[in-house]
Image (cartoon, rainbow, N blue to C red; front, side):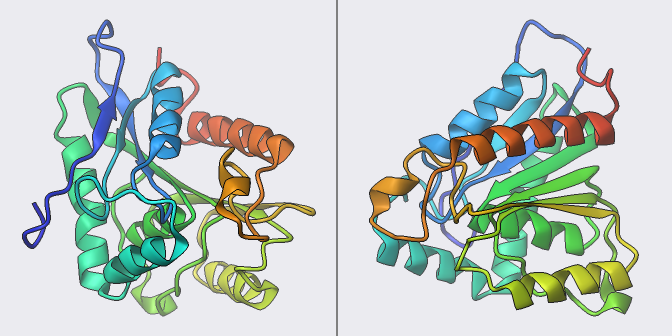
Length: 235
């Protein structure tokens, strides 16, 4: 529960493995905790991680309607305290699971979820790495306030009109000023939501699934997690 809102996430792991494993949070897009987020969490669990796909809106709040999705998202991001509180609640849930090594946690997110993972990293949470897929870069705090411990990987579509080049350039400059370990892969001609096979069905021109960018970004994420956890982390 969070301020009277029942939040219900989904956890995946291989119960035949008895040793503690690295954990990965998978934050959903603005549509809510739909099948897309859960599918990604299952894919990572198949790779040997313990994964948790948290609910950021409230039990059963999933939609295909953009106005409704935006309303729910704004209800979270408009209150930075609530936003951070819910991301950290998910982190605590994953850390407390018996199969997880609480010292080896990473977070990934899609769209709104990518911004959520980055926001948590900015507060200095002890994450090994953060991956944002087509997320809108949140405002970076003043350099003196940054306490980032995580390596950051941002995966963006160059043709994503939701995020202006100026916002991206400013975001990169602030990360450089803060001497943070970060990397950004930009996919030419690729629009927002490029990892979601259902993106084309929402009737928004800027939403477009791109199989090649999806494949490449996923491969880069797997390599990134191997880097931050160590190649033998899942064995």
